[in-house]
Structure formats: structure tokens, C-alpha cells
Image 1: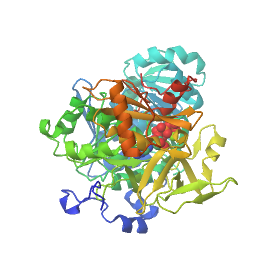
Image 2: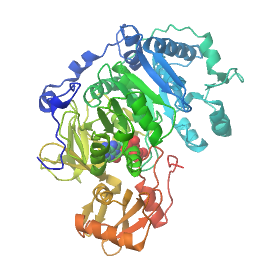
Image 3: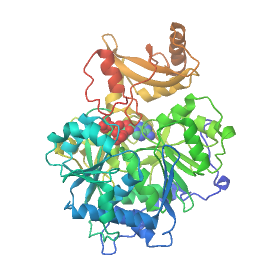
Image 4: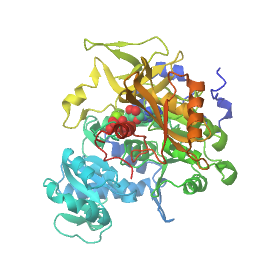
Length: 583
Ligand code: ATP
Ligand code: MG
């Protein structure tokens, strides 16, 4: 046992975790057994909307709160599973009446309003494909995605329509309808009022036979490494959502669950909509943006028990040096999970100290549709590690050979490509209109993630960096994550982004961009101190040779540090696609 590890004792848990014996479960797991927790359509087949809503509405959970919506200005709305069944049926009928046929794409561009959540399930009911867009995108990224995704219908608000859609409307000739969520009257034959259509629609809808392989969701990636890709998912992904809801989020019937991600990103749909409902759990949706006080108040006031958030939010909470458990009653909280980018060990430990719960890191991608690797509530956490692969998921570290084959690296602690054996239900089925790019992701029966990692002796996976971000310096390979995490240990550092800057002598030079915590000012002295700190901890070969202070590091709108942008700016190169860059 390493002193930094966080050991778990099952006797300490008020609620018995769903998974206690990891090795045994991993060995005996089968997807067919897991599917027993799902219902299937009455007529046969599989549809996410039925699993998430209708089956519960038809059960003793009918009157349980499915959606608890918290408005920006203190408003609250609750929707039971029974009500959700009716509302989503109405919207499915709306789409059907408009003649939107199976497989056609319905885009959403909306703040986190209850209607957005109702629509997503309604779209799936009518066997259309949901394509959620982040409401803060500007017109150009919206246009690109709608064109590439063959949008037939768009759901949005009056404000967003005026500001962002009217300027691009003439470039979207295939778009048949725009439904305005907050308009009482139809504007014309194409621009219609959502509520008027809903008022006229029947609240009974029978989901037609849906194949598990039918397309369900089209999601664009975060654009951290380049042009966002359109990732195609199918209804069968619900198997992975069910499994991970059970084992990673450890959902139990009485949980109050809150996922802070916006449905514009895959976490916000897979885990902000589908997964809690599949488990019949109350799902909180907050319309507001990040605000530490607001967030702590929600955790306290709504008695959130399972919380799924992201490193960027954790780092922001860390930046404010507060004592949340003294100021708020967070005693209902029993599990915190995080995803999106590497979770520095400092953040895991901060959770233990300040929230009285460690943060559990987990790893996945838009392409994998659901969580693949995770720290589990009942298992020892090794801070800095993403955890171990979930039951039903076979992950490996591989090396790509020159002849196009791959070799699995079985030796522990050796870096390579993080890859997953194909065959798990939620693996994406295509990059829309980019077959060649899709094919390149697969070698033999491995899906190659594009991330580099290593596996320790006990099967824990450690993130090294994205293949594109790896720094080659004086013959060494340096992963930015390791350097960033070390810098984060320094009391002055709030965030760090590390890149390789081309250098004639040593190939690439490790350069760190740093934003400071409140109370610290940039100075040459602090630079020298940080360089010395890095050298002491990491050794001269790996430590940053240059440091630059920045108030804010460039991030995607979902909060990921964009190292490619730091690098492009450093080198004076074009910035490439910046559609997902935070304002
Ligand atoms: P794009 O593919 O457009 O460049 P993206 O890869 O950021 O964007 P997502 O699918 O949202 O788009 O993010 C998945 C990626 O996020 C992973 O491949 C990995 O690089 C990073 N990531 C997610 N979770 C973790 C984690 N727990 N630890 C380290 N990295 C993570
Ligand atoms: Mg990616």
C-alpha cells in the first residue's frame, strides 16, 4: 500500500456499493446478464426512450420525480416519470405529424430547459436521431454541424433563433422546421411554436419497433485536438449506460443525482439524461452556469447524493480557498465522479480534505459512448490514475508497428496507445461522412483511442497525454499531464498547460503556461521558483524550462485546456478550428 493511495473500507459505506469484488465481477461479467436489467420494447427491439422513461412510468415509479429542474432565478419544476412519459409522447407525436421519418436528424440548440430534456426523449421515441448542440456556439459552428449532420429539424429559443440561426438560414436549404421552445404562436409555415404543437398533440405514443443497431444520437466531439468529428451512436449504447450507472455512479433507487455537464457534450446526454433515468433515479438539471456558492447550495439544498462533474469545475472550486463542509451541510453526498480531462492527484486529495470525499476519476470519449475506465466507490483510489477497466471492457496498452499491425504491451508501466477491444455495445458506429477517418481508428480487433497511457502492475491505467500532445525532448517522451500535475502541487498554481516548443538543440523544450491562484502575482522570482520546484520534483530532463503566466488558459467550452492552441500561439501558427473555444 502506497501512502498516497486512498483505501476504501466497505463497512464505512451507508449504502452498500453495487460492486464490491472487482476481480470477481470482471471475470464473470457478461453483457447478456447485464441486459437483464433492461426491459426491451413490448413489441421486441430496444429503444433508449422506453428504457429511460416509459418502463418506469408503467411501474410503481410512475409518481417518482424523474426531473427536478432548477431555473437560473430560483424557479423549480418537477416532472414525474408518468408526466415525462406523456410529455415525451406528445413531442414524438409532433415530430411524427410533421413527417419526420426514422433516422432523420433533429438538432437542439437550447439552454438547459425542461423542454430540452423532454424533446431529447421524444426524438428517440419517434426513432429520429438527436443531435445536441451547445447553446453558446456562434452561428458558424452551428452551421458547420447542421450541414454536416443533415439537420431536418431544429429546436431552439426565440433569442437564439434571431441571433444565431437567421444569419445562416439561407445556407440550410434542407432544414424543414424550426421549433421555438418559448414562442406561443407559429411565425410561418417553417418556424413553429413548440407549445402550440404540443397543445394539439396526443399524449399517447407507441414506440415502433426499434433495432438495437438503429442510430440514436449524433454527437460532435469537443474539438480539443482539431475539427470536431460527428460521432454516430446507436440505441444499444444503453447497455453501457446501464452498466456504468450501476457500477461507476453506483446508482441506487433513493439517490438524488446531479451531472453538471451540458447536453451539448456527450457527458450531458449519456450521463445527464439517459443513465440516471434508466436506473429510475431523480435527475437534477440546473439551468445556471458554474458558480461556487450556487453549486454548494444545490448540493446541500437538494441533498445530492451522487455528483458527476469535471476537473475544470473542481479546479475552480479549489481556486477559492474555502471550507465547504463547514459552510454547507454536504452530508447527503456519498460519491463524486469526474470526467473530461486528466484529474490531477492534487484535486483528488483536495476532495478528501475539503469535501470529505475523494474525487473519483474516470475516462472515456465521445467515441466510446460511455465510461470505460474508472475509479470505483468501493476500490482503492490511486490518485492520478484513471482507475481500472469496467466489467465488459477490455482495455490494453498497444504499440502500432510499421507494418500496420499492433502488439499489446503486457509489461507494466510501459507507455503506449490506450486501446479498447471492439465489441462493447456503446462503441461508435461511424464518424459521419468520414469513413476513412473512422477506419483509421481500428487495427485488428482494437479501437485506438488517440490517448497515451500506461498500466501498472495491478491493472490501474495512468493517463500520459493525447498522442498529439506528447513532447519529445532530448530523446525523452514527456507527457504533459505529469508535468502539469506536479506544478499544481505548488501552492501558487491554479492551472497549468504544458506544451513542447520546437527547439533546435533538444527537439522540443518543455514549456508551461500557468495561471495563478488568488493572492499570487506573476514575477520573475516566482518563475524561477517554479522552475526550481519542477526540477526538484521531476528532474532536469522533464521539468519545464520556460514558464509563462496567463490569467486564463485557453479552454474548450466544456472546460478542457486546449494545448494545441497554446502551441499554435507560441509558434505564431494559425489557430485552426476554434469553434469550441471558450469566450
Ligand atoms: P476532439 O476529439 O475533437 O479533439 P476531445 O477528444 O476532447 O475532442 P471528447 O470526446 O469530449 O473530445 O473527450 C475525450 C478525451 O478527453 C479523451 O480522449 C481524453 O483525451 C480526455 N479525457 C477524458 N477523460 C479523461 C480522464 N479521466 N483523464 C484524462 N483524459 C481524459
Ligand atoms: Mg477526441
